[in-house]
Image (cartoon, rainbow, N blue to C red; front, side, top):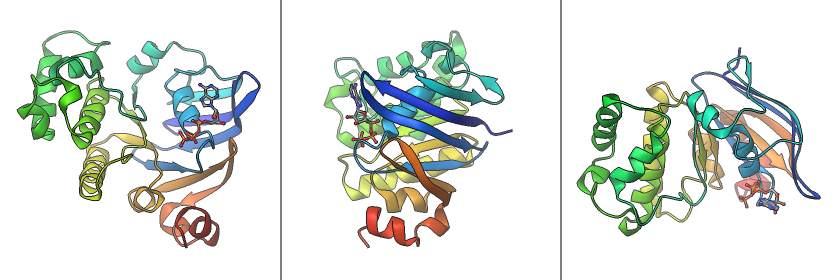
Length: 235
Ligand code: ATP
């Protein structure tokens, strides 16, 4: 049974059909990448899975359970967490407050322990725990956005454009973290403009065009696929 199964998903914004009959699956333990041009429907797909966006049609199934219509907070409790495009940390709150916010579905002493675990994983967040999140660098804010998502202890982590606007050396650092998280058991669905890096870091890739999946397969094979080379790798 896949950890995540999307069947015939359609999502509309008024008259705009952002996602049209999309089907895909993510197996436990995988990193799966969604690539596609601006407006292809990648963010909308992630937001439908995290239940921030209401599907017009189709089914979203998490570990065999139909979650198509559950509320967003229940999706978090069910093991789905999203690090959104543009990071969206709370700029006027401290790093620590942002992490506590990520644990809003949880209570008890384990939350504090998990915050300290995040400071071990992301030492720069620990050094800046009382600093306002808005004063962090772009890379640090991205780490905070990922750490905040991890605070709900997700089985499935949705990452929307983690490399956006970051210097190459920071991007490599973020992707090292993504691979480490995966090795430690977090399944990841990744949306990324940096197609090459994303494909080199993932098991499988789906290509979206105008709200539909055009093709997909093993990332290692797709990086050499003519269609991907021309459209997404500048080949
Ligand atoms: P990007 O990389 O630019 O974020 P994307 O592949 O993630 O692109 P989406 O953001 O999912 O694409 O957008 C899919 C389509 O839905 C686009 O045509 C976009 O203009 C439209 N859209 C997205 N959000 C909204 C919204 N809140 N209201 C109306 N239309 C929207």
